[in-house]
Amino acid sequence: MPAAFPRGATTALHPIHSILIAFPVALFPGALAADVTYLNSSEIQWSNFAAWLIAGALVFTGLSLAWTLVRIAMRRAGGRWLAAMLAGLFVFGLVNAFQHSHDGWSSVGTTGLALSLISTVLALAAGWIAYTMPGKVRP
Amino acid sequence: MTMLRHTMLALAAPLALTACGKAPDLDQTGARPQLPEQKETLLPPMKIARPAGWNGAAPSVPQGFTITPIATGLKVPRQMLVLPNGDVLVSEGLGGSAPKLRPKDVIAGYIKSLGKSGTKGGDRVTLLRDRDGDGKYELQTEFIGGLNAPYGLALINGDLYVANQDALLRFSYRDGATRIDGPGEVVTKLPANPNHHWTKSLTASADGTRLYVGIGSNSNIGERGMALEEERAVVWEIDGESGAHRTYASGIRNPTALAINPATQALWAVVNERDELGADLVPDYMTSVKPGAFYGWPYSYYGNHVDPRVHPQKPEMVRKAIAPDYALGSHVAALGLTFLTGGGFGGNYADGAFVGEHGSWNRRQLAGYKVVWIPFTNGRPSGKPRDFVTGFIGPDGKARGRPVGVTYDPVRRALLVADDLSNTVWRITPAR
Image (cartoon, rainbow over the protein chains, first blue to last red):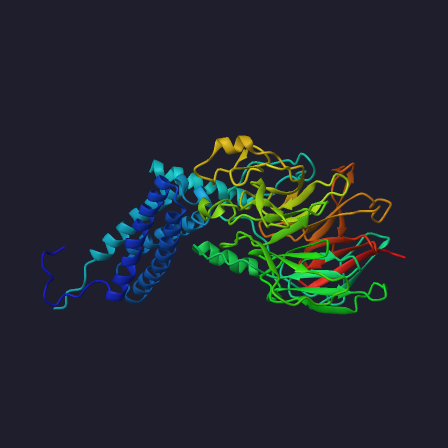
């Protein structure tokens, strides 16, 4: 990345696209934190929080992925890595949402914690790719 | 990568079970039900029978019996009571106010609603009267209005008790009355916050001095937090005079119907057990309710079968837990229980109990949706359940009705079945 934002450069992502991607980046780690707290406290409300965070993250992951795919299709622009990362995130997030629909301890357990950890890594990776994507420099 | 592979395996295992989950036929009724391994699949096995009308058809009964509808157009009929003069009371209601705490509650609530009639609960008790004893109940009238999801009914010495979802009420009953006005007297409040399981079943002891109220759990297995489970999954014994209560039995997840066994005068219950451990767990049951007994919920089922979803676990409670007397089958959703008295229908149906099975969602192959007969000898079940009223699921797989309360009318030798899907009361009598 260049140190300074060059004159005439545009951002790679539309601002709304960036905002959409910001949700999974924030919400999946939030779910992970809630899961860890639940496993440490057995206080079920933390698992409920995690379930909502995952559900919200999934919605915005889906929207982010859709936007990315449209962007690729329309401009034949880059973003395939971003699309792949968001698609993987959506799959793991969906499985995790189902996992969190179990009752009591089974809503998290080892599987839920692992899924939240993987989702968090994928979300941060997707964010990294998205926010470091080079924009076009207009002459 | 190891972590990832481990997770993929952990995920693949339950999916595989869902895909090829044709379990061998298990024997899940009677004193010693087969209890398979727990299967917590990623999504629970589900099937909802969508409602369809009877269109003049009726449930099937064994040869030698006839069935007729004696009341239609009710508003979610639940339990019934036969009065000394032969009048029939029907409680009508639909309670519960548990908040939706997570996305699952929203989705599961929608899915379960697909199998219901959509009728708003009547919050009333309806009286049915057959003036001339011809089996046609020509009078159908509101007996008590303004109730709050009434369910259990009992009559002791001229006092009518109605178990609302939040209180036990007493009304003074005059023989032959067709209406009772006034709000009734609160005998005692009942645990009602937030009423995940709201039905308050009710019966009176044989000598009429005590009332028993079944109070269901506030969750499947405690997933709303155990703070909400104080005085839930219990049967209360209540002194009718003072309203004082004691916890008669506990760990009894959802005791949806109570009845006194006429041979032993002991309290019996049908109880709905927990979901989401697989299509063949956990069998609902019928049991004598032993004073002071703990039946395991939520820590374990059928004695010492530990539920891994409950955390922290309590091994000392699991050690205390006793197994119920008689399994009815997994996910049959038993909601009605009545014993035959005075020789019953005679023949094969002289001594025993009928159980109404509403049917549930947590299974690909529907279970329940029928009324079964369980023979008794000397006050104990002495055989397997046999289908008695069937045909609630039509050939198209849609539900015509769903049985709830069952009540034997000893005066007129009839079995009454409340059907809360078609909002009908069915009456089964030996054919003349």
